[in-house]
Length: 100
Image (cartoon, rainbow, N blue to C red; front, side, top):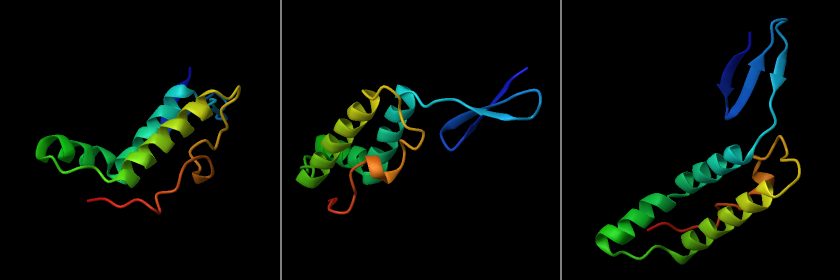
């Protein structure tokens, strides 16, 4: 019998003998990480504000979203998605983003 537990975005299957068996990350994991980063940047909030009120989204935020999408696509194209795909090493920085 296997039990599946979600911890930090990674699924861990527990075997009968108590050993842990980590599964390899897949494309859905990468897409979820990209969405998490977009949410953290304030992109979705700014996009809704742009449609509802007409306040234009900052260009830096639009550019960051494009970079995050590019990084997600690049990671998904790898033969083997790295186990640490959610590391800041693979994703653009949020440093230069200005939100309105």
